[in-house]
Image 1 (tube, rainbow, N blue to C red):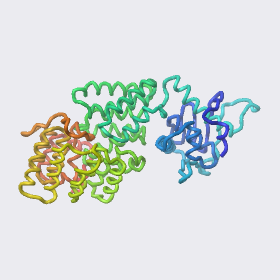
Image 2 (image 1 turned 90 degrees about the vertical axis):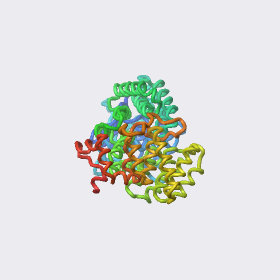
Image 3 (image 1 turned 180 degrees about the horizontal axis):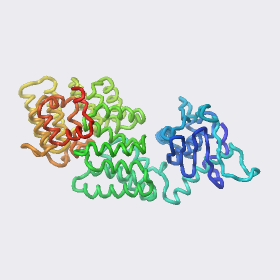
Image 4 (image 1 turned 60 degrees about the horizontal axis):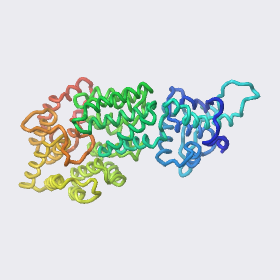
Length: 515
């Protein structure tokens, strides 16, 4: 390799910043901008350093070398993978033909097609007397040192640092990727710590807004109003620093309830993604919104992209299980669900996705086994486990008294809160107890009928994602096929305004297109 030996993490920065060009790709270290034919994007300091490091080499750069020259200390695989993935997204976003290639079991290299420009990066220094100009290789090396100095010095001094290496912010990102509501308070605390450490960081404020948004949905009802206000304030602070900050835009787009605002929410998220095409938080919410409108194929397409881009993010995996199940792609569903259970056996949402998809695809013994096996963290409370077991026994073919017990138990459970109502609708639909299922749905989504569903989930029921606010996703699962075929379903979607949204937007659900 060349161009790296003289610019380690401890090198003194040059007197000015140096731009680096490789074909149609231009790297501007000081403002952290990647420029290409399709435009300009700003990237995190470590992403810029990774690209500069690769641009400075004509050969493959190993992960160890990236670690040494970009972090200057031990860097986790997660940190390196994240920076490399972000670099690839930036290259695609600016429309350059330069490509960041992975060399299996070796490292990475930046490839610039010969038709685009010279394969060797070319520095673009400020004008100065010829005798004082450094060599091209020295300029590229100096750019590496500049990027490190800018990230560690100038941006910190202005409190506008993008906290790539900040442990608190890294943990916030990881927490979002895991999608565990039982870790919400800890994640919110870490986001607040990140803001405290760098109150001028748009990303820190953006992530705080997103964590507050989730807390507003999953947290205590009594605190929801103050949390919503705090979320909006954090998002505005983020956007005052960085008008394009994607997490802040995502938080504002999804802070209003999805129920009753399906098309508007979808459009807001599409606007966020038009500006930040690779923003996973916005894409994740858009997939959920598509499913809530019955557009399962569209949701699955989004899920496939997210899973491929980040196969170790649990927040994408369990949702994709439901989508594959709904589309009848059961072999794929099993692969995704089993893999998720292997990686995150104590994740409540992963556990529930596997439990339900086993029970509702004719594998009742395996589902019943999950109720008594596995990590203690996902064990259901005894009364709830008994109800699930009774339901699964009835699904397995038991009739008469066993089926009546399961139906009555689920009907009673449906009163206890949004999460319990969703569970009851799933179970009652699968059992073919349509009268009881519609009774719960109308109580939960329309506040009609003899049942009253509690506003919040009881403390003795497990926390699972997306369960407190009213949702319509469960209406389009296979377990609700009998409901969709019933004349009362048309009345339901009319009553909640979903049919009006379909008509006005022209976005029909899959089940109507199929019919």
